[in-house]
Amino acid sequence: MAVISTVPRGDVTANLNFFTAPADGEVPFNLVGDGHAPELARRNYGDDFHDVVIHDVRGRESDFNVNRDAFELVQGIPPSAETEFVDDDSIKKKYYPEVERLLLDKIPGADKIYIFDHTIRRSDPNASRAPVLRVHIDQTAASTEKRVRRYFPDEADELLKRRYRIVNVWRSLNKGPIEATPLALAASATLDEKDVTPISHRYADGYHGETAAVNYNPDQKFYYFSGMTPDERLLIECFDSDSLKPGSKTGGRTPHTAFTDPRTRPDAEGRESIEVRALVFGN
Image: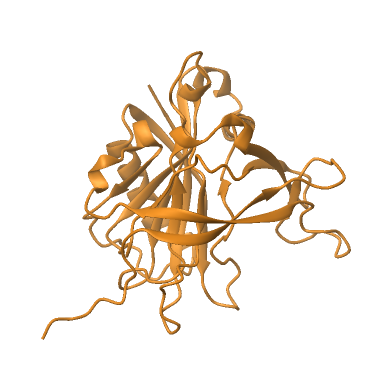
């Protein structure tokens, strides 16, 4: 007897959350992590919801590559030496080397990798981090340069003369295909400069990073890979220094968001995932 899949497939129209600027004209910000005064607002900007067609690219995964499109799906990855994904030290010891090897193999010209953080997301009310239902970009040009200088103070000037990128390596932690809150990505080439707004990421210790919010533009084109499985890795480029070159057609940044697929069955297993972010140097 044939097994009927419960994974939603095919193009879908979903309601995505975009950016609305602060009404007072102030610089938009997020407060990140713990330690902030409880009376402070966690963010000062608003929501802007739009129905968007998200195209399922299953069956044509090879049409997209990270060098041209700023995202790429890598399939057929062997099981990880890390099996639990609950202990940060274990993840760094067992999973980080696998991510480093993948990036060296799959990012053209890459010869130096520095992994600087990871985030685990679980669709559970008690989880510390949940899937983000807001269109965003993980890094900006300014925050990428700042990270290079932060982690490589003595080498930064030379490293910044080379091609440098930040790549997010995203994978499912579910045992079977993802059913709920899959990840949508906007094609970098369909993103206009005016669509992107830097967001100050403020930590309690005084460190300021920067991400980017995305304004809605009907010309943006969104994609997803339905039913992602644990043997797949999604490479999401957050920034590529080649995009700064005069006349460059390298977008080098991928807006993305979790989304609620209206076809998802009510009792579907919640999505669990890990994203690992790395500086990638090369040529």
